[in-house]
Length: 99
Image (cartoon, rainbow, N blue to C red; front, side, top):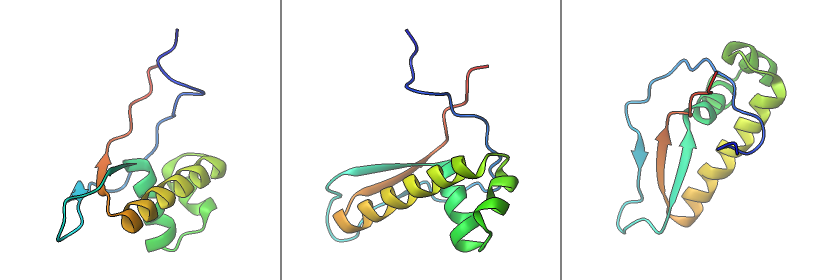
């Protein structure tokens, strides 16, 4: 039996190494936890901060535009969920694909 669901995540080129790997709400303990993968953070950085098109960002990361779109949507949803609900945000490395 395989330890993962669906297709394995392919390698992605990540152009950042964040200084801070977790963020928490101020004034009260977090009510939950959200884990953002480094590839999701990179997709958001390229599209939302660097203002690249999805096509340009996908080329830079070495992935398809559809894969970039998926990473972007997942990352954005996790981030807004954490902000709205006061969750701890943790940034983690993607699991390497087994080749």
